[in-house]
Image (cartoon, rainbow, N blue to C red; front, side, top):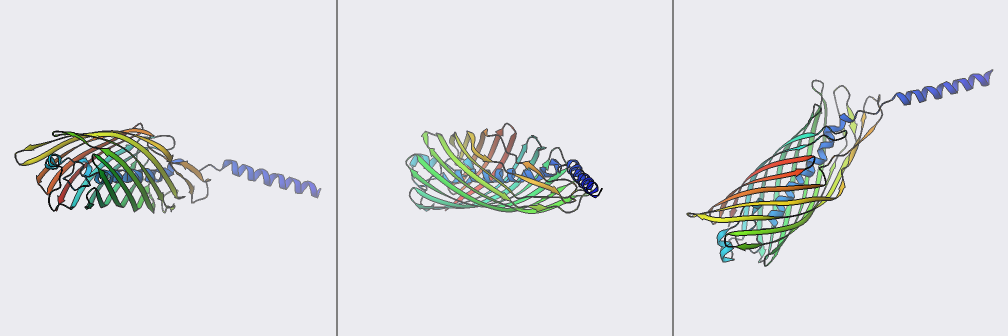
Amino acid sequence: MLPFVVAAACWFGTAGSALAQSTTTPTSASTGNIYLSTPSTVLELGTRFLRHLGTEAASRATGAPSQFTPSGGGADLDGARQGTAQIGERYRAWFEAYGVRSQMDPRGDFGGDKRRIFGGVAGLGMILTPGVSVGISVDQSRTDVDIIQFTQSSKIDLTQLGGNIAFESGPWVLGVAGIYGFGDVDSQRGTTALSLASYDTKLWGALAELSYLWNSGNWRVVPKIGMDWARTESDSFVESGGAQPVAGTAQIAERARIFGGAEVGYTWLAGQTMMDLSVYGRGVEIVSLNAGGLTVNALSGLTSPRFIAGVSEDRTGFDTGAAFSIRFSPRARFYAVYDGRFRGNFESHAGTLGLEFRW
């Protein structure tokens, strides 16, 4: 009789455990949506800053008034005609303010997001020797992210430090740039009882771009090819408050891209004021991608952990933009720039206003 009782108890215990496991559901994928947006958003910020540094590095390293100016903002007519540097113009500084609106479409477990970015850039460039120039820049930004299908949002404060170097030989210019970024993220989920979390994020990136200048009169055409790489790491987090707070693992996302295109520009004089208008277009292809992902787990223990794959823009896309520049004096210039990025599941529109000074 005793063996039968023991066997029955073991059977019921095993069956009960199996039943408990079968009724435990994974943590909802929707809880991780706002955290999936962070790596993608930080990569977007890094890409924008790298593009800025790449354009800046492609400035005419001889010190001749730029054919390639910050943010693609125009050529210097006197430099184009004379091919020589203005006396004493070894240094230049620039200051920019920018705004970006972008959107990632819903896909799979991800409900899509909308991003609003505001920031500023300050930089300093120096000609080392004829044909070689260097520059440093700082980018400070604030990003507001909202998930489209769920009541979730976050704020990302990111500081980026960057440097570049350019080498010029005749019409050829090779620009190389690198960045490091760090910042903090504050997120919230829910409407009344909010689940809150704060954590850090970091960013690394590099870019190389080769360009060729062809000009005829006041016109110029500048074909460009290049590649960039970026990696972001976001720390793990633990939410506090709310109906069902969760904890999440650290995230790592990394990608490498190649791109190619051309800029077309025209420079003219209006009285004593020099003006420039340029447009550009380039195709972009992601050749290596790790979109990352994270595992979320409800702190209540009533659900089992769940892995959620990371999100990324489509591998193939197209960038385009335009810039208008006014040189008030040989040493001061104002420029306005529009940049657009278009992918199958992602779209971004950015505007920049900047001032450049030379001495």
